[in-house]
Image 1 (cartoon, rainbow, N blue to C red):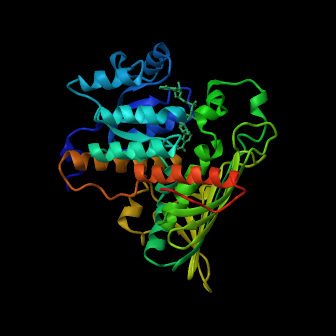
Image 2: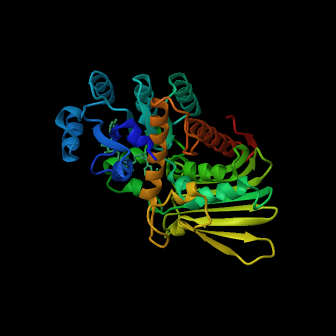
Image 3: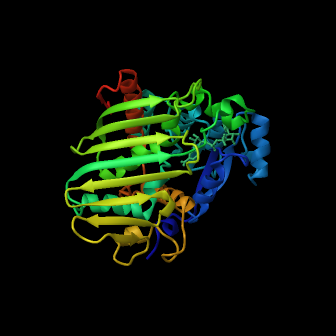
Length: 389
Ligand SMILES: NC(=O)c1ccc[n+]([C@@H]2O[C@H](COP(=O)([O-])OP(=O)(O)OC[C@H]3O[C@@H](n4cnc5c(N)ncnc54)[C@H](O)[C@@H]3O)[C@@H](O)[C@H]2O)c1
């Protein structure tokens, strides 16, 4: 059988925006984009400083004429080429996601964007309009929802195995802000993270809360309609929010609880999801991403494993090695890149658009509405507050 990539005849050409050699997430994106041969990284902007951007591009092996000084230059020069990029992947500090995405969409490129998709709900809604008007692909890299086992959770919620959902519990705990980093020396990364204008006032929500909300909604197959939230800076004197807890009411009628913090001293990075229906429950955590526990009322617990042969071909295809071989975040990112690429190629070949559940701009709109509702609720003493999109 001919694959979409074979039919298309070449890998998609990708530009990276952000993600220089010293960045946290750049390696992840560059590796994941090329993991399955669907994309080739050929261009980029790697710093807000034009000279540094060109220098970092060269360090990454990008041709000198395609390591650009800024996004406007990249869009203009690539549009003028006979072999232009097809898409951009954005992993800059949070406050530039919107402008970089809007510029790329307006230039006719598809977008893979890291979270938070924007700083405000209005910006996310504006991007959604541009994506729809241009029939573009817009993928947000919430990779936790791209593991075979979190996809399995959604599948057994959708097929009714665990019954009608009653409760969704999600938590994402880290210790990166457990000490007062504000008082110590600041590198470039800390400077933007600790600046509420650049990271978003509700920092913990931009950093990890958005992942937790997205995963909960993804697995529950429902949006959140109302929240009662408590947001805080747990460390005295801190300007940015490092903790949020919320009670959630889902549109489906399920209830939920949500806890995220980056100020949990000693806490190793972990995201955990539990979903309870009226017949049984699922329990997944990122430390054991290749496994999920399925417990039906009155029955022994089953441990389902990535690659189990009873799983659907779509779920098995999310892994690349036989079960038992550890796979992780890079493979989950690569699943998103593969799905985004397949959607881009399908559209370019005039075939039906992909229905793969990669996070799309509409999910980003809901995330931004959720964040704004949490902040509004907390400033109103935890009053139940509608999530407006
Ligand atoms: N999906 C995930 O799991 C995940 C994990 C970590 C970070 N992120 C997101 O990725 C983004 C980057 O995070 P990071 O931790 O790698 O940050 P970082 O500070 O380590 O790296 C940022 C990179 O962007 C470059 N840059 C800064 N301003 C730029 C501009 N205007 N134009 C082009 N390049 C610019 C910098 O030179 C640097 O290379 C953030 O939005 C963050 O929320 C996502």
